[in-house]
Image 1 (cartoon, rainbow, N blue to C red):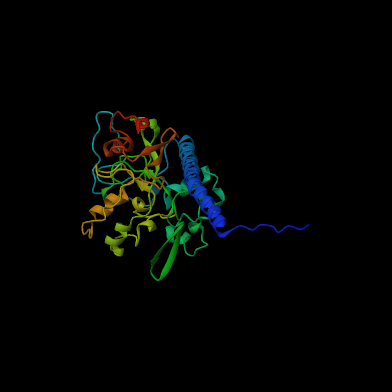
Image 2 (cartoon, rainbow, N blue to C red):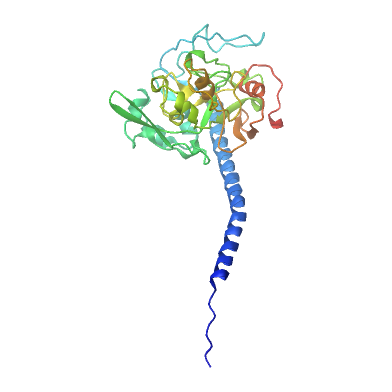
Length: 338
């Protein structure tokens, strides 16, 4: 005898759907947490590779690579302070160093490419001319996206662009920036008391604060809506996320791949307050350009001079960030405390 198969009632179907929705709601935070942890671990691995490349370069050349190598001397309004009888001078008076590599335009990352498994890309770059020679067109060498230079949590554009003289140039973006010391932006104000700056040639023995206590590289949070609102395009990148590009080789590495501890105001993940509606003196924009940060929510990954990578929370005082950024400040700091 055949029996009729009982179908789901509408109420039962709704109950099942509700249960599935509840389970998905419970699982989603756990999935997001796992993804965030994976992105943070991948980011740390990227910084580890970049840090090891810088240390391998230093081992081969007996000095760290320049933050950017320019084939000319750049005037600076900053006079390097004295840290005591054991101080050294990276430059003379108010002038940034002469080129490490005469006749060459090269960013910090371009110089390090042969040490970070990017030698094929390095070989197709023309470093005898400025950045525009390598970046005309989205498929140009300088426009290439280099994954090790991008944090997987970074939501900003992977390729930036700049239009001048009727041409649009493209640049592969980067999430990581070298430590320039106390001030990395604007170029005339660069303090040159970190490991990387224009035509720098810092040696290990120059870092008397200790490599394990001194930042080598760190992350930048590459979006800031308030910066975009108060910025005048003629005074800088049209939007903040355009302030990035490993192939830029000019006087403005503080826009593209150099950061610093700041002036006592900037902390990790600092952004321009939404209450700011104008910035005629560039004060807020300069501060924003100097700030470490990330999309890891509560802090940022920093690579130190000994090659170690640490996650530093955004509660870290700005004074400690400055101490970890200078190479001869003679401060006593414990980066593991934050």
